[in-house]
Amino acid sequence: MPEAVNGDTTLFFDTMGNPDDPTIMLVMGLGAQMVAFREEFCQILVDAGFHIIRFDNRDVGLSSKTSGTPPRIEDLINMQGDDLSDFKVPYLLSDMADDAFAVLDSVGVDKTHLVGVSMGGMIAQTMVIEHPERTLSLTSIMSTTGNPDVGGAKAELMMNMPLTVPTSKEEAIENSVETFRLISGPHFNAEDHAKETAMTYDRNWNPNAQGFQIAAIFASGDRTEALRSTEIPTLVIHGRLDPLVQLSGGEATSSIIPDSKLVIFDDMAHDLPEALWADITDEIINHAQAIAEG
Image (cartoon, rainbow, N blue to C red; front, top):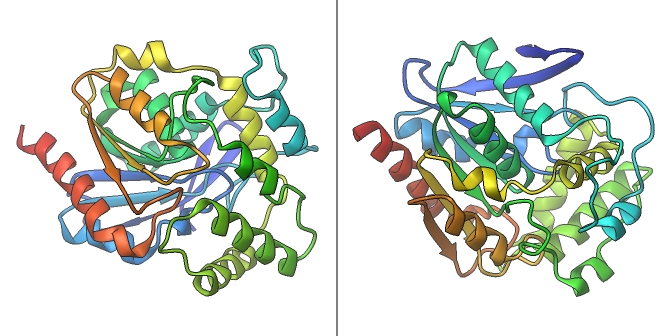
């Protein structure tokens, strides 16, 4: 079982494709395991000539779990927008970025293209800020800058989101289906999502993951000024229908990163629907290949 170590944290990862090809590291979002980047999605990138790394962030999947009790999600949401620089959390996005670099070190990759989704986009942005010399390009998908004035969730969404922590597999599936029904676009399939949730629950379920990870997001602050000075070629992808990280988050990300490209999908919300895989991967591939050719 391939693992990387960052201090006391162990990260599970896997790879696909030829290690001699340029690497794309895929960074998943809040509470989601690396298998949310489906193998079929990854294979499209492999077939285009890329070596793929995906990994479980800390607190999810087969990676290390944080001890203790996380803050209540409801409390964290109520604190959103407050100054949380002194808020005590077990780790920050910077630590999660270091986790990703530990994975790269374990695989033996010096430089990589980064593709991050939602919280994964925030981690990837942090990687670019802290170690640009190890980044070939950035693709930030349905993410935001950390500025509380942009990319916030719609109020009506938060009023209807199931925020209680499930205590059984059945509750976990029910909560996840309802959550993704609310945040996904017109391509959402509840039956398929229920099957995927059952699979990830059986792989490894950590009810504390989202609480710790949301705390890390809020306590990490605003990346706007740091992103202004990045010279890493950047692609920003966002769904026009996204109610969780609204389009303003993607627009702000693109507007502050010099020479970045913004791609908006009209029928995408806060999801990566299979119906859009071809279009999304085309954008990622063209972006990364342009860097290689340049």
